[in-house]
Image (cartoon, rainbow, N blue to C red; front, side, top):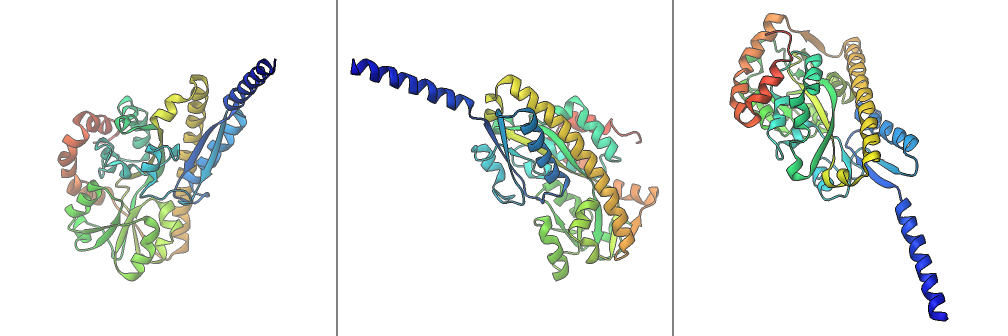
Length: 330
């Protein structure tokens, strides 16, 4: 009798235990390296808000900003090992995993941000989101941070004006080669370190969108900002492939719809912030903003055009063609 009672009790506990486990929400740890008031930071918080509103009890999101969980150097490895489930690194960080994404680093490939956005909607660009699947990295969307400008310790009107200067860059062989063609040097470092490096004279220039120039106060230590719009700074929202596929289909579909909504909001916010920060930097008057004439900009473009051919084999001629067709000119 005791055996049968014990058996029944044990069976009931097992059912309750399995039921409790089944009801545990899916946990998504979203780690990033920037402040919460940036477009990326706001995007992570909006994702958390919408997920917990629309999938209550099913999915829980924890956001870790400002490298509070993992930094630039180890965040992708943390994703691959399942310690975090979502990141949004800069596209330049993926060079070790795929060469195809170098297409976004090629200078003057896209005429403007609208061309970048058109490319991101193309099938070829959507395919690039899956270009790191063999390494367990699953791309969910592109988050844009705007077109890049040059900042410098001297006036840069012609490509040869950059000769001899040292520029801070992200770890990207394309960006390294870009400045190499101009006769300039490069120093790889986090953008947050650029201000002190400029003060110390370790570097004499940077590249980045207006929001980065303003947020890091680069305009207070650089006498010139040159509106080259020579490239774009983009992030990719990524997850661990095994983790993503393990999510029940209906829940995953709902998460993907939320991501699409958040991506639209992030990109809209980034555009507005860049416009506002451009106006703020000009109004502050601490740096001289140089707007290149179409002829001057074309001289820069021609000087850096050979890079497209250099990286065509690595990136893929088909990817390069798809990127070029989105431009309304040339």
